View 1 (cartoon, rainbow, N blue to C red):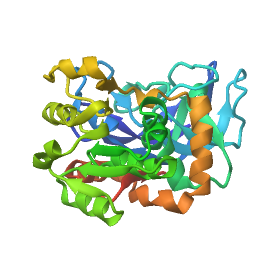
View 2 (view 1 turned 45 degrees about the horizontal axis):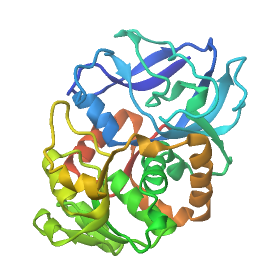
View 3 (view 1 turned 30 degrees about the horizontal axis):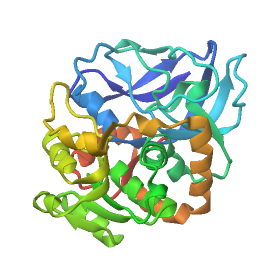
View 4 (view 1 turned 45 degrees about the vertical axis):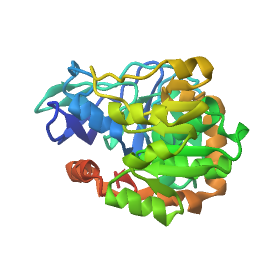
Length: 338
């Protein structure tokens, strides 16, 4: 089957949008999905820039959150059926775990992928990276459930347990896709006093528009926060955030720092209750947390539509990436496969 796909051929270079051949002879646990829409997030930018080190899998596909419809399933797949509408997520849930799909390009030869890589009109996805949703589930919300919203939900519920401290003073460092998701979910889960640290004009304007307190780096030390979530991965900002925690405050590191960069902290407050959490997807249990999140999103669809930003066709993905890098996007950037 032919499919248009966005391919990372060389680190720190634009993606190439090429036609590939998708092998329809599915192996154990594989599901063939026709994509409708996907979210673009900082993880893909990190992959492109190889922030975790040399990329040994080039050329390869990208993308780990989106929504689509099941075209075909392997014989041992039981949790999804042909015709189901599914959200794709990078965290592993129940179901068969499959090897990556087989993709070929006339120009590049073999194109690598993982168990989920969905910046392609048609993708082979591992069953355990898919969850069935209602056929009328909002497509724009569905495109960003699998990373931004799911991670944020896990951070708040599983790692910070924010509903147990009410009212809580919360700082969100970095008001991008994750930061905004955190703020909207926090207001539905609890009643925190939310502060935002970001200097980008678009982010500042959006935070103020929804009634959040915006502070500068210089003002951090004037506060003590029960919870701080860093989405930036910037070592100096992490250090400042740590110093601004209350005695029993918790700092959650969601953003990934570039490989080799380190932070320097005074360990003494750790002995008196202060904590740092290195978050891995919000410690999400997909099969427990995702259905709860989907119910919440379904009940408050218009509220969460505030997260939706600009939409681009797959062929224009490099324009979308450029906008993301500028930090001037109005919300979560979506890729449309229509």
